[in-house]
Length: 394
Image (cartoon, rainbow, N blue to C red; front, side, top):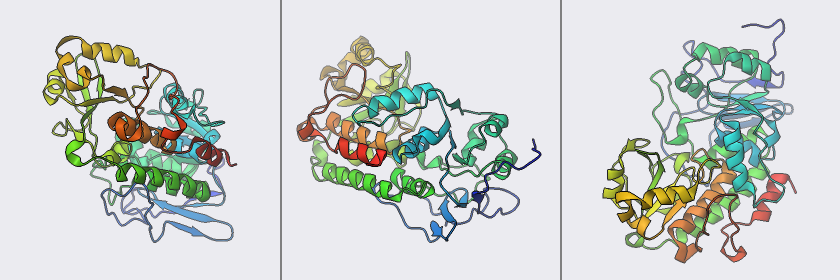
């Protein structure tokens, strides 16, 4: 596909070297060191950000260094963890595409309800799961805030040459998806680096030139996590937890303590994973859940508009699962999504702390649907108004 005139933004330029004819081989600016990083503090990279009088550069694996003249005003996203970063930085209106727009718009706004003046507006943006290239040409974005490796590996219609074409003719890519669980990348990818959620957020903040907003939100997150970690009960007194999605005949298992931004809300809580021996992201029969007998069951996507927690509880109270400790003690609680951005992470960490340790952090209210419930001011783990002011720019 070609155009009479190049449509790539003059003020957003790809700055990473192409090695061996491939976009992702030997990406510049990253050492290739893999492993978890702290979610609360961004790491320093020698080529992460460079500023001149008219341009600035930001570096993140897998694309390397990207040069900007001004913040992007329209961004294509797939995963909501990156769209959520734009929103947290006050640039939510720049998002022109996202995976499952109506679903994530509804879920995000349930969590954002306690933040005055803050909301997502994604319901009517383009659907970006496995898009054809024509959509990206039509959107003509300033930046593709998405991982190009993921575009090729997870979306069957894309080839490496397609991401190169989009980069050269429209705008660069900038995003990292395999940090979801420090997941193994395809064999053709070299030196892929993993980042914590808040470490990645710091880089996205530099793209939008919103480092002050990042610093303010990161301080709130860091203080909340410190409060939680300092007040956790002894390891022997912590509950066993199963993080799952329930289907009619299967249980989809999501671990609690592994690496990656998928667990950024549960990992700081130090709970015992009742299903730690089950392969990550696998499905098992209900017998496995019964045998594990968790003290607490967390339902990922339990706060989605399509999920009815009363029905989930009723399902578990029927049949053999009624003997599970979490069911007998009415400790079945909702979560949001693993594809969390910074604001979702603040709320999900707070809610999970209350669900697991009510005696320490205050009990999670009864929840049967609707927005994030009202928490008594003295039991909140972060200041809602302060977060809203940061996002809005007050």
